[in-house]
Image (cartoon, rainbow, N blue to C red):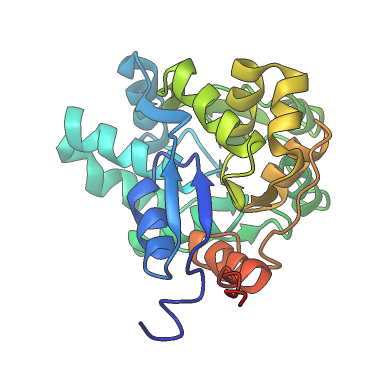
Length: 280
């Protein structure tokens, strides 16, 4: 085993990731870690596709001057909805996107744009709602029609109110929803392993996972389970969600909020587990 594959040798890391669970698991196991998988949240297409398709048709018709993309998942779900319901519209939708101003909340929606040959026109320095608002603070929005791709089904009233206060018309769309995927018993079992000291780290990758963790366990038990375990967050939104619940985040990638930087941060913080030397 070389130095890279031994960098987390003997470590036990819990991950509640769903969308990229296999990718994250492979990254960690390749480095010698043992992974405890507990998918807390699943992502599904919006249960009613009609409002999504109606929004897409309005964009194609020219009813949108700006588009705020909050997640890469959102753009991909919009495209998959087109591919499923009206594949003949895909080319027209992308052509229209090329001609409207695109605002991205962070690197993931920017990457999703690059996958279809487009680029962000305005990028938030910090991948949060506040970051978007700050990026648009000096931008003239009065009279403009602004599409907002929502983060799951969260109405993001702060962003909507800001846009409307600046004189914009808001056209919101929710192309996907979050749904619970793990049984409560699986979450409780993982919490017991953390409490018993069997886990070196737990890595959260979305605020929905944090919410589900606390919903199932209750505030006191959720905190206790994480008290003696290194807690990692993929980015500032997740870190803030943990922090406001009293959980200390021990590590977070410094500037690139993806799974590979998170894996590197875990390597640097933990390293391989040192085995106790045999005593004579």
